[in-house]
Length: 253
Ligand SMILES: Nc1ncnc2c1ncn2[C@@H]1O[C@H](COP(=O)(O)OP(=O)(O)OP(=O)(O)O)[C@@H](O)[C@H]1O
Image (cartoon, rainbow, N blue to C red):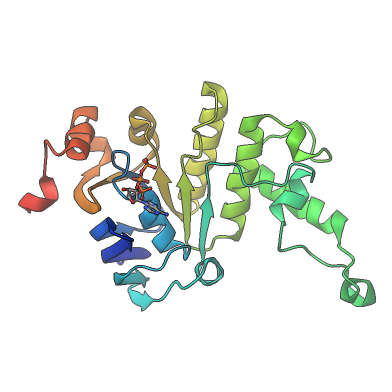
């Protein structure tokens, strides 16, 4: 099966720091792949290179097997790649529906639309439909999102990416700030999205979470992929061993 998104030998320097030293990565439709690695392994840099935030110095990025140039986040989004960042990038004063459509608002038909008048009822209707499809439960969709719980806010942020992504969603520590119950809810949203055929990439330091939600795990160490596991067959020790360098699967291969 052709991976929906593939990175081959990505190199990225920040001044004299070599953040990525020939990193490879791949994810297919309908799977959750956890991208793990110790602090500084290059996870965020790789995500930035695959979402158009940073331009790699060298290496190849392929979508559906075709080389692409992700020269900006806009280009990445146009090609179907969305990212959820850990810092809850929502607009707290707007309601959940407005957040879902942030930057992609639906205008009223005709002259009003040309004048920039938004079709709020239609956005509300579609938002309610999407929240229900994704299992996002909110007591009210009429309140500013800042008044919801952290888990609800994060679920809306996840929903927003998922609704607009056509191929791949990157989630950088989506549950880091959450309690146990809220975390489970966000993980459920991730599973649903995967079941609908999206490729999901989860960046997480929480190894039990990684093993519970992902189908595969790819391990970065010192800017390179050093191991790949099927989550079903992997143990915590395998993951930690690969992250620390005790186990060097990919080098040996
Ligand atoms: N903007 C930057 N300027 C300079 N160096 C950077 C920059 N961003 C990342 N680095 C360096 O690149 C290397 C990889 O960092 P990166 O943030 O990608 O790792 P990470 O695996 O995401 O780490 P963490 O788990 O701590 O978030 C580190 O040595 C880091 O200091």
